[in-house]
Image (cartoon, rainbow, N blue to C red):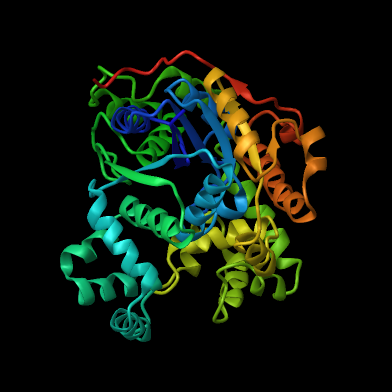
Length: 423
């Protein structure tokens, strides 16, 4: 059985994701698809718009056979840590044959060549990077400038769009781990990442904005929706209905208040020991919580030329879950083996799990009440953060409170493919 692997967030799952799955299956000629999906918190430092089981259900109805959770300690980190964590888990399953990812560029070889340079870091390239950092710009900006100086503007352009950047991190992780997994990329379809312009393949960011607007100002949202191509269900009822029923628009207020209580009631050392906090940033963060009246205002008071918004939001999420630098380093160590948390599967997914159980190196979690006892102390600590993230997502952003849902929710089991064919 040839198995295709995808690392994703599906926040929320949409038509572009369904297209990627179908196109990847056709090109790779795989027999099955396994997805590692972020749980309750996203890589950009925000809570998911739908809980992980609703998003799993959507993925299974689009041709995915097995959905497992990408643990919080990887999912809500930098692009490099996000990709490396996903590849670490895929490597440990022992069954993934090919990794598929989307990119704005859409061609593998130039991306792979650049990834090799970024892993090897030739002396001349490192000198360009040091020069950029010395000017005070952020690391991503300095790296892009160094690539332009070392390889030319065409290569540098590969580093100024989000999907290309993540694609490069996947390829870097494959090189660094000397993985046997092959790779492929499909060109991202439709609107740009943050675009609200009419498009059959509207971005996840655009969809989130429309869904939230639909709850606050239904008339304005309807005007946008009427301009879209309605021949294909880019916003199907199975996405809209759970959102309208479950999403709490006051979630950001609860998030802010919980953070304010935690940060202002502790010594500043707790902030200093949070991942991505350095150069005295802990004082700026603490001061912002003394006066900010909204989460967005708080973030805007912290960001700077060297500290972009996504980094600030990741810091706040890590602080909320009380993840410290030392623990994150342990989870990212090459010697650490994570677990495989199963969120949903179909009949083919059952066969994948059997193959992983036979060939893999990591414990498989389907029932936390039982399987948690098979974990090492560090694996249990990793699971604690996943469960805490789920509890907070439920408290902040869902209308029905379900304590410790990770321990009561069974994996989703779906089989019918209800999304359109793109052939």
